Picture (cartoon, helix red, strand yellow):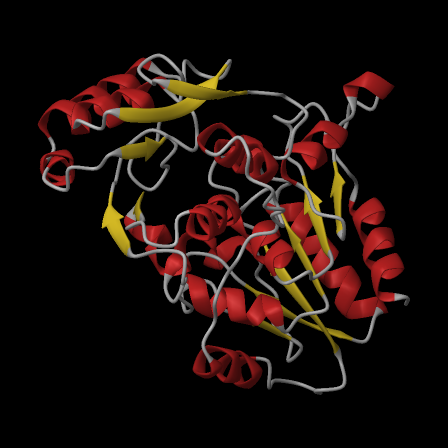
Length: 328
């Protein structure tokens, strides 16, 4: 949802009097709090693209059947119908998402052509380009809605933290020596094949603590708690202890973020914090991944089959990049 916030800002700028509702899963709702571009956050716990609800791969038959049940029978969809929307955008561009817009009864529906059947049930669509950043692709919806729009939008995610949240982050960082460099590590990945590996992260943490003047905050869900099992006054495991917005505030106060390809890299992107993304074995091109998901201050390390790099990054390679970013 973070990557859709530039689009939301464009909608608000072009249609200041529109009522803009955003349908999201429960776990991402808090990221839209205090966002001036959003009038209402509505529950849309669709099983596709949602690993919190559906543990199966997005293109599996079980996910398809779960999506079918959601669209046809769920109370959430029935409630969305009552809002009588005039326009709808399926930002992720999926067959199920475009069908959901039609099922809700939205007359003007925008989708993504050339990706996962995303234009099947839509009246208008943007063209999918494999090497285009997801945020920039989302902004193209503005162009097909308002072809004459001269609006120039920053594709960077937008998060609106409160002073209380920022002050709380400062307190959370108040461990060990405050002169130490602040590093956030997020070892969770959603699916095992997306992960750089718990063992690699633990080795990296030991290396950082041994060779640099740094302290580390580990963030993630309750399931991520056991991924890094190191006892040291310079590391605190916040996994399962912080809400998503609290983790975002912690990131905003850090010097560098190290994570798998997950929400953490986009939290870093929102606050222009330098970050290192470690790709798991399922990704074939770090270059392409950066084009799709990266930021100017973000480094993505992993396979690059086009250059015959067939292995994921080593611990030493990631550590070297940490040293370079922090000028150690």
